[in-house]
Image (cartoon, rainbow, N blue to C red; front, side, top):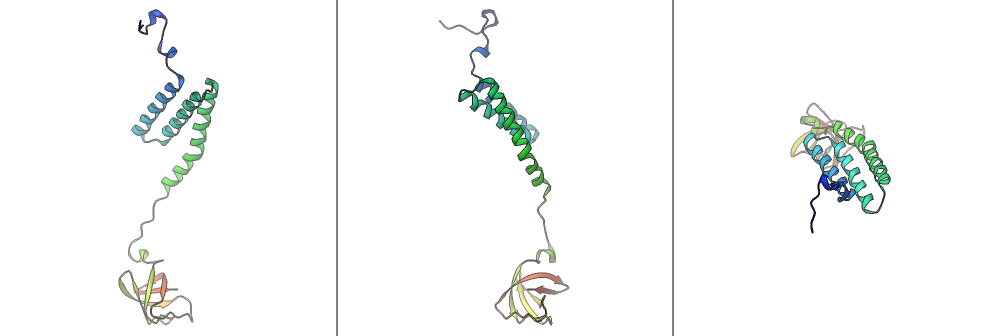
Length: 157
């Protein structure tokens, strides 16, 4: 005979549902909160709830489950959150114009020395160039690095 759970019989759901299921329900609820609020802390606490569920599935008591939940949640918030905040603050540097040419490699077309009479091919264009180091010369075909742009002249090394 199948009996329905009811307050009249003294039965309730807590007597028939394993604790790991409650941990997973909590993890899903926290996951939904993560999606709705975009706060990564909810996801970290959800991982702690999953750790509590795993602890129950492995036979740990309720005290151990709560300790594991708290330890994992606090560890993730303490370690991962600062890294995420730091990552969010670092904006990728977007360089354009002559700033985008600094640091690029170019090919020498005509001898480059410190006099400024040389030519290089940089980003598909021909530029006048001079050497950064006095006395240093680069021959046609060599690769050079653009250090800076001085007017219409690339300073290379």
